[in-house]
Image 1: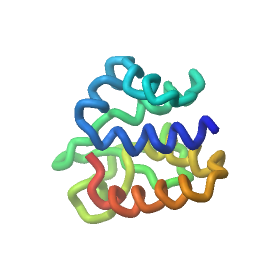
Image 2 (image 1 turned 120 degrees about the horizontal axis):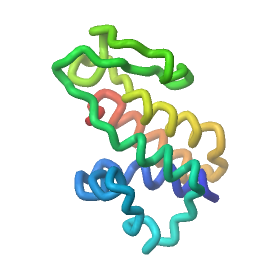
Image 3 (image 1 turned 45 degrees about the horizontal axis):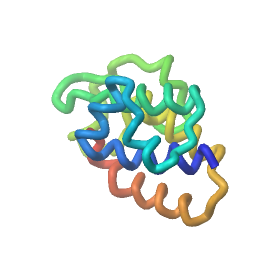
Image 4 (image 1 turned 135 degrees about the vertical axis):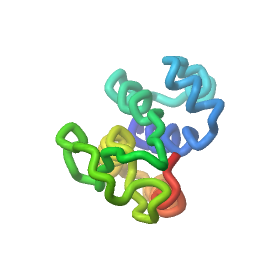
Length: 121
């Protein structure tokens, strides 16, 4: 059930308040709702809080790419209409996509990706 909780947690990062808490290592927002996140999933979630500058050249990742191998390209990315995810967020999303089994959470997560993919913070 942890992948489902990580999917829900990633969606909650749309809230600036939650994003700031997680970036500071505070997972209380999730614990009060009984989210079950492993240490690895907490690390993925914390790394996914990084924001990508919109008007600068930044590394961007497609789902399935190795985010560690990316260099700033100046192509695509948030604000340029390509719908890329920041590398750490792409890694967390890929983890969820590989582990997620609950069809209702899958549907919600896919819908969130569609909505946010073109407007990543």
